[in-house]
Image 1: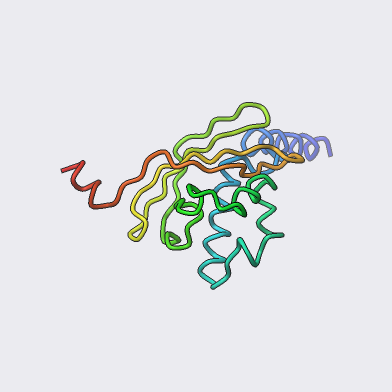
Image 2 (image 1 turned 120 degrees about the vertical axis):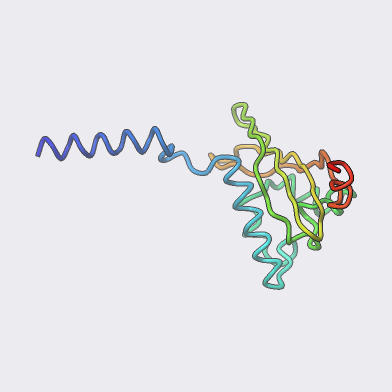
Length: 150
């Protein structure tokens, strides 16, 4: 019996150290999950901004939804929000956390959308990371990249 208790304790310790059990998804996980969900909805013919607002609130703050509703010009054409760029692949380049705020720098690249580097700003709301803003840092087409490299 003592051996079983020791094994359970060791397993729980490893779980806490390696995966952060009980802490929920990190800011980078939230960005990945939100983008994957958003793209799945677009590919199924659904406009998540209009038809799936309740589900969208799992990933974004009310303030971000208000910004989207007011259609800030930079968000309307933003590759993270633009339905035309749903072929893009997301890669997390850097995560910076400061208490209840975080910034996730991502790269989006796709044959339709070209390449974009964005900062996704998140805040912790009720112990969950939620997207609060998105800003384009750098963008260029694949043709521009070829010229830059070559």
